[in-house]
Length: 153
Image 1 (cartoon, rainbow, N blue to C red):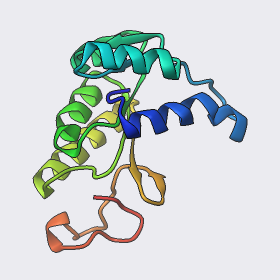
Image 2: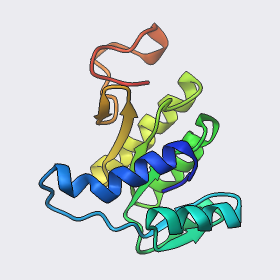
Image 3: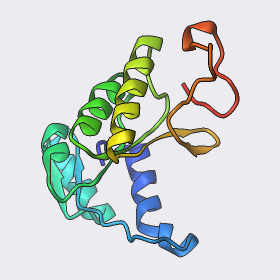
Image 4: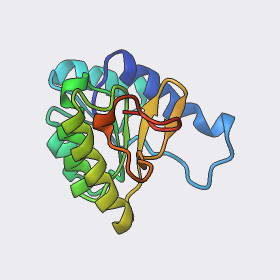
C-alpha cells in the first residue's frame, strides 16, 4: 500500500479483517507499505501489521512480493503511481478521486485497459465501493461532462 495516514489506516484495517467479512479465494498478505517519512511509515507498518516499510513508492512497486498496489495518497499522486504499478504488472486499487484532470483519467484508463488485457485488474475506489475501470459507452467521452452511471472519474 502507498500511504499510511488516515486512508492508509482505514485500508490497512480493511485488508486485515476482510476475511472475517467475506469468503475469499485468496488471503491478503500485508507485504509492504510505503510513505515518505521513514519513522512514520515504520510506525504505521508496525501498528497495522505490514511486514516491510518503504520510503519510496517506486521501491514498493518494484517488489516481487507485491502483487496489488493500494493507492491511499493525496490525489495529485494517484496517476503517476497507478500507471507505474500497472506498467509493472501489478493489480491496482486507487482511492478517490481517481485523477485531478480528464487527461489524467484518460491516461490512467488507457494504462488500465492495456494491463487488463495482459492480466492485471485495476479497481478504483468510489463512494459506493470499488468498481472496475471505466468502460465508456460507444460515442461517449469523459470530456462530454458527467460520467455515465456505474463509472467513477
